[in-house]
Length: 124
Image (tube, rainbow, N blue to C red):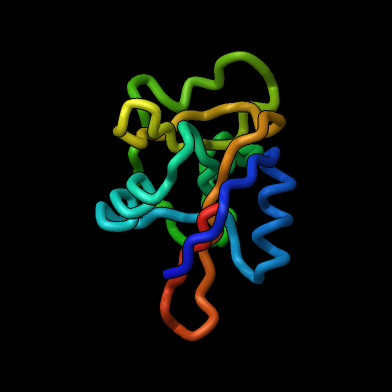
């Protein structure tokens, strides 16, 4: 596991940053991954790799199965605009629940990559 400094970017910029590292914005598949990302993130909200597709279903940008969810109360709610197709984990109150938000706001993010068969996390 490798942690890196804080950078705040819009979703597409964060995605490109992760791709430059041969990784993707983090996908979360278990309580363990959820707790780990929640604890390492020192900023209030950070991007996770969930995106809403044209069919209104959410999918991980790394193409892995959506087999774990931690949506906040009444989320996703598609509030406040047409570009609410991205998701953040909100650690402001220590819970790290997920919320759908506009992709155009800058947040911290976590890149997840697997260069040697072991997962590594880069905190940005």
